[in-house]
Length: 282
Image (cartoon, rainbow, N blue to C red; front, side):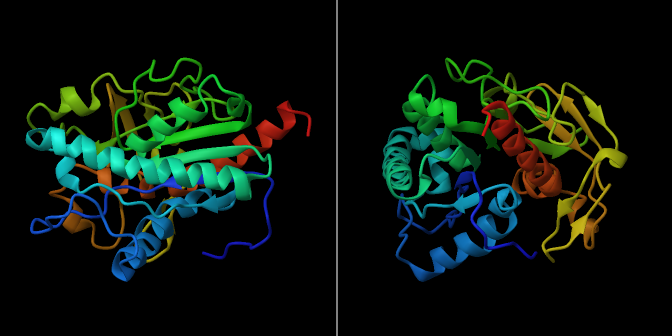
């Protein structure tokens, strides 16, 4: 994917998802000075997720001491909250540093996935919601974790593709499949379910409207999936990609929440940036 190097007039601050999940890892938080962890951040979430916003804005992705995936297990709740707090401190400090050294009064997008969205919600509440910075918020793409309709006091869900100043959110699952156990109630039901193809109130969207998914070979596959929105979940059809047989038994498309709609996000982010400048008479 060829990306231009020129500076853009808007920024995106992207917070990546959980990458440390080893069963034998005793650490609660990752070591960001570990070269393997840094390589993983660049070659997974930056390459396949954050890249969706690169045509619209200058990309900033802080390395942070993310919490181990076990923090989402109820039996580790107490230690888990401490580890998440620790990770958030890195995000918080990075955001302050970004504002002081890079932002230069530009409007910005907040984008995140999974654990990143846990931290993004907190960041928005602390620094943006109802604060001076809210005027600079183009949009927040808060993906892969439930975000409630009333999550913020002043920042609301967006229901049209050119709306600005609000947020969108979704969780992807295979068509007609539900999460197991109580996770549907806890993690999905009642969450804002945006349509990541049309960005409006459509509850079903066909393949003809899908702009394109980004596959692991870095190729875009257009008109590839149809979706249906239910309470808290975007149901997606089986992607028609090489190796799709391996995807057949997969129920959760959490790992592909952004990849499935990569080009849709890219085009939408550009539109929202344009709208911000139009509405603010720049």
